[in-house]
Length: 130
Image (tube, rainbow, N blue to C red):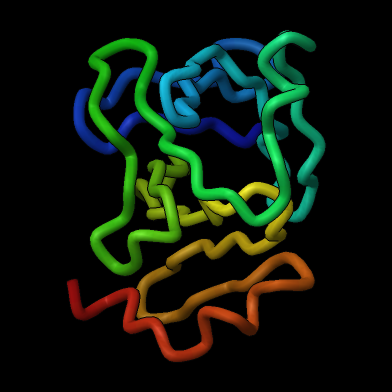
């Protein structure tokens, strides 16, 4: 199955090829970042001059490179949200905005499928109450 993601605001496909393309802002610095479409894979690709300023534990802001909408989740300010496009309809996917924190969630109906060793940090989040 090919994992295809879209902006929840403008619905633009964010991984036209292999990687998901997002804009990342850390303070006054911003750049493009490529992330894996596979939940649980936390390797990133970005320009070295930008990447050297990313530090574990720091909160970053992700936004859509097409419409510029901020992708912060309504469920938690520490998470970002995308749409996972599937044949039976879109699913919400949420992932940590905290650099170095490995937590991703696929919201499938009334079920939350967690990925990553830090997913338990978000056990108290009500993903469906927002």
